[in-house]
Length: 124
Image: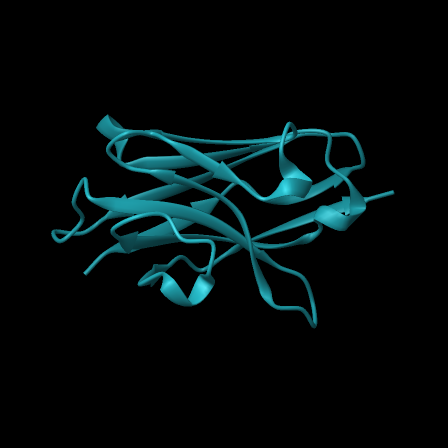
């Protein structure tokens, strides 16, 4: 079993920055995992934001966040980060950290483990 705990959300104005953290634990967590960040706005589906392969650190981004968001992982701390810069009101959502065995996927249904989510609200 793998446990994920997110933190770092909040209420900010447009143009501000936030840093989200996801701490990973569990005896079955291996370097072969891929880690993703997704977000879900009220009444909408859970959408892919970014992902990183745990072992190699290769990153992937949804087009609307490229150049503004950065995903990274710190192996020694079993932690994944999502740096959110130049935030826009349309970035408002609950952000979720997720893990899956194998390669990165942009589909939420492909992920095996989820955190509880952290709210990001961007005012105009």
